[in-house]
Image (cartoon, rainbow, N blue to C red; front, side):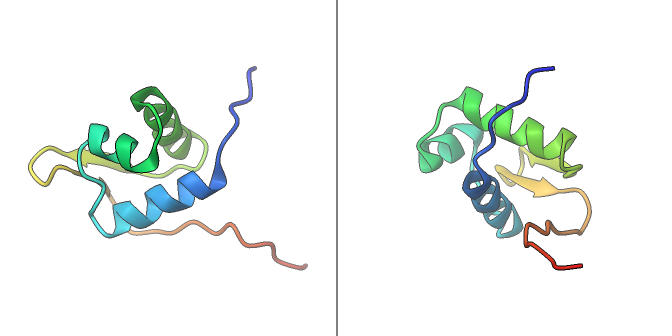
Length: 79
């Protein structure tokens, strides 16, 4: 299985924009992140599949949203 390299800062930025309902269209978001559409879709797919993020695109609002409330936790925790 090929492992995808993931830019964690990109995931965090996309998450913040989704929470603000301010991603814009896929083209606008890719341009804002200075990445290709393909890289954007790969990252969104990673977030959906590997991180179980319920991301959908609203054509009416022209932004990505989460279908349900939740959050990511990328912080290291001592056990």
